Structures are given as C-alpha cells and as structure tokens.
Image (tube, rainbow, N blue to C red; front, side, top):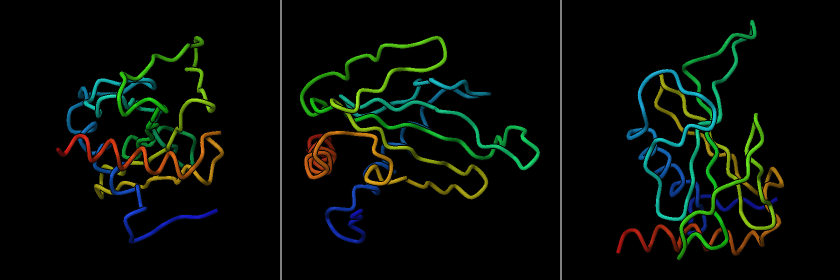
Length: 141
C-alpha cells in the first residue's frame, strides 16, 4: 500500500473539497442511502452512503458516510449511471474507483479512506490519482 501524504500526489485534499461542496449543496433533513442531491464535479458521482452506528446499534446522525465515484472517462464525459438493485447500485471496478469518506458533523472533520486500501478498483492506481488531479485542474481553469 502506498499513500502519498503531504505532496502533490495526496489526492485526499481534492476529494475532501469535492465532498465539502457536495455536503453544502445537498438536500436538508434525514438522508437516505443513495442520495446524490449535492453538487459534484462534472463526470464525478458522490452519494450519501448511510449514517454511522452507535454502540447500541442505533443510527449516529452525527457521522455520515459517502461514496465518491470517479469513472475512467470522468475527465471528458458525464458520469454513466449505475445499474441498480433494490438495495444498492452495482459498482464497476473495471471502469471506476469508489472512494469512501466519513463526515463528522460535530467536529466538521472529513476522513478520506484511500482507495488503495480497499480494492475498490481494477484501474491502475497511478492513472486514478492523475485523473483526480486532472479533474481538479480542469475545474479550476
């Protein structure tokens, strides 16, 4: 596992920025998994994935989970919709990466789970990292 911290390859700051924009623009109220009502960069899909869980098994409404999807063509094309089952969407590891993130409402902290740790893609990790930075560069030009 390689995580590039504190250099130009640390994509977590980029994803945190995307997630914060999504959170600030999404619908208010109790969220349902799959909610994608916030703003995301062109070609990228972000969804609410669920609330955390308290020790007693109840929902922890202060802890929110999100999935950030970047498709191999996200730099130039709209994000292709996922096929869905009644309880989940069907992830395409050969075509996209899914990065999970947590947001803590009380402390305003974001935790990005590096995709290198969860086998969420079959795409080359260097390609994915470059793609994230290229999308960010495109949107800041």
